[in-house]
Amino acid sequence: MEVKSALLLITLIFTRGFALRCQQCLQYLPETCIPEASVTCQDVCSSITATISLGGANVEYTMSTCMPLMFCVNGSINIGLLQGSMNTKCCQTDLCNAQLAPALPKQPANGKKCCANNNCSETVNCVGDEDRCINGSVSYVVKSSVNGCASESFCDGLLSITGFYNITKDVKCCEGNLCNSAEGVNVRHLFREKALRRTESTP
Image (tube, rainbow, N blue to C red; front, top):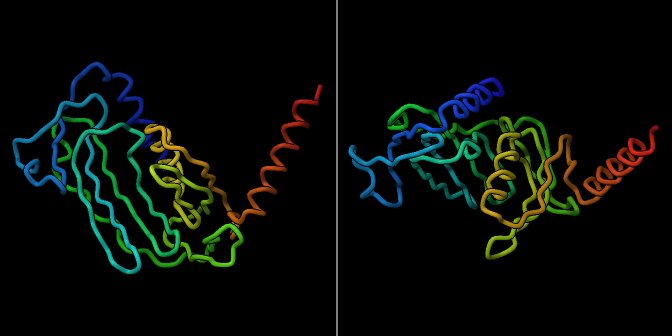
């Protein structure tokens, strides 16, 4: 994954001045989904399929369009009643995103657990490549708590996307079972502060 991302980034740097044509098809705007529909892009073409499950009800969204490289996220998140996954295929040749990316298959539990709230009175079972626990809140119109499991790619993507849109956030991802409790987050922050002080005081 890291090698592919690096190669794509290098390609973008050297082809930044060239306009790219991308297929445009938004599920919620069906009139855009015609063979002739395309947009001019300076970043990457993408095909995205996102699946959201809320209380057992599943909804699937698909989209093909142009978007910034940082939005090329593949992974999943589980914060209790709400689970979501995103499969994004990015490319950089004209109309290369005409074929929709398939939805990510349902994954089995991987044995990792994360707190579903700050005091860890509830937990969630992580699945697939959800190797991080996530803790914090995101404010966009309303403030929402985010506690549960997430894949590394989803954690990185969430931080990049919220920053791109200037969405207020206080979100942290960590490794280790139940590491996202309020106590665990505070202890890790204290250790980082102590380590920083030792580094600064070293001659």
